[in-house]
Image (cartoon, rainbow, N blue to C red; front, side):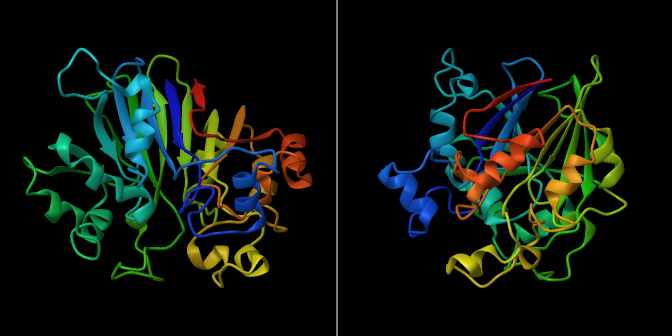
Length: 303
């Protein structure tokens, strides 16, 4: 199994277009050891030629141009992306579908809750129906294994996450189990497994067995502190309100990851305010001491 990190940042990317926090200023003026990042998405393959896109970032066009493995130069019009899986209906993970309209129809796998949000509050499915058949929906049922034709050697399971629904959802602040899912991906022959959870709000009994089982964790690293946005003066929402588990709280994500047996523990969906983006920061060094990696755009993970 091959995983390519197309985008490793949270919403807005890094640097965020309208932000001059110390991190964003540092990457712009070159005074901080770091690298720019686009908004979160990954691609998965079982053969290195045919790919599943997991979440369609608003930056998808740039990400595809920067990733030759997803090209098919032998075709006049074509791509290595055979299907798309959405883990939620947030703009960060679905707005890129609009940029893929020239390639319609697309096979899109998501839960009924995500389909509802993307047919009403942010109606991407109805909008794209005007482009060559648009988006063809394939239903994901939480906790039921499924396969996708483009990657026949892989099995997928969607695990409900305690998080939040987007602001345009009818279920904002009262999400249903299908509004946010992690993906457990298992390779048939080797048995190697990945847990991809870019929107982990709170570890509960549903997700813990999968966190303990996976060989590789690609996990939400949005914030260092729950009150990070207000402390930086750039917002008022806490991580919990947005559906993200901060890294450094007493019962935070770093402590959880330290207790898990996975061979690789990698953070993705990192907000522009997070001090771990500074490679020389004490926060980044504390992660490294725990064996926790920070993903970057273009990172390739082989399992």
